[in-house]
Image (cartoon, rainbow, N blue to C red):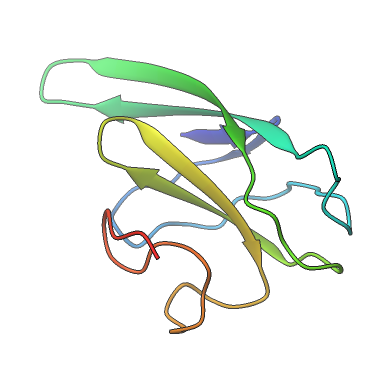
Length: 100
């Protein structure tokens, strides 16, 4: 399960899922923008919950789709973009743990 500022989704697997619904301002605020991300992970024996306040990367006016990337060591990156992660110009990670 994944929650971003209250928007909730079930998401499993390495290719991700869609979360509905997360709203972001059309223009990135000058003072920055933080969201609360809460997710769970299950190992072979038990479920673990994590929660982190994450600074959203700056994005162009008009916004786009919200992408949440889970990186090693419970690091989280939130990207707002009109490009899909498969696009070479996408501003976020392209492969697991790869930063642009």
